[in-house]
Length: 457
Image: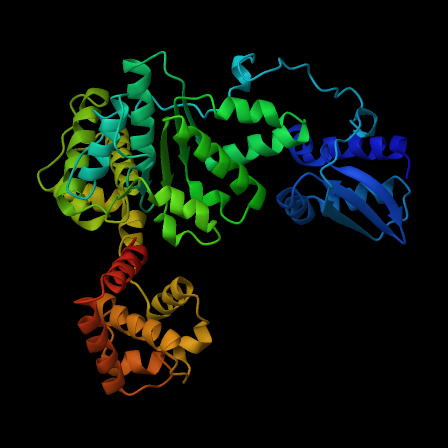
């Protein structure tokens, strides 16, 4: 297949997948030939090979056939890391690459890799309670802009517990206090995208120079890079370079470093060498404080709108999933009451928030507990309920029995039936064994509490 034919295919792909997808995933491909009905392509990274194969292989195959190429399937392999001559990079018509300034400091604003900051996310708007007070204090210390005794600061917790809010607050405060500092905030997904883009455009040295010249690097949802080898490699070297220069790093994830599956051990070790802070699920007092703070803010938007006593307490008690759901419920409630011209009463809240309140009543099932415990300990679900008595299986099984008793209303005989028809005395023994071990084994205690939070979130 000639370069001209592939160019025509690229033009059609540009129309069908869109400019952004084409630029990111199709343009970096190098077609090496068609043989025995197989169209072979090379890509810069294994991740890109996997992504294109899953998401664009059918589209490429379809357009090649439309162009008259006798092809049965497409195959993607990692290139041998040799520079691709400019004449080999096939671009669709009228899509020439724009000229770019060279060097890490010579760049236009639209090429800055950071994500936009939300001005609403400040320390003043963050409600502090016992579950998040340590995370808040650590974030405040970093935001002062001076030297800190911990690097990196690693914040982790479930959805809607305030990780992103604190990261935006740090960046916003640093911009206000130290406008000369180079503060870069972005998601791990954006880091990966920029890395792939640098590989594609052969500007990897510019990428390295940019990310290693910042004063504070903040990466949100770092669990996203787990399993992506090339991105992890570059992240590790960037991390080391910044730490060696004494630059501050702030990381967030949905779980502790040691619990992120497929994250390289050396990265886990590096992340754990700083301050690792868990944002615990909200308690009743914190949820009520958040609602009271939001209500005061809404009074200016909805003047004259009244809220009856007990409504905020009711919501704080009933909606325990996460802060986003809680704030969304309050926003809907104020908007609804304003539109219908009624006071916000308990009856109105129950009428307006029926779906949210029903979802908040979700009960944990024994099957869900078994699945989560099996995933955590990396054992097969069939072994969890099967007859095997190996220690590596028996201990997770006993943890699942313990959590089933703690988090469900099922009787011991019912739990026994769900664990392969075991007798209720076996279930009782397993529960007592876990309770006994938790008094002496801190790791087991942490595992059980982490699983409990995961199941209740």
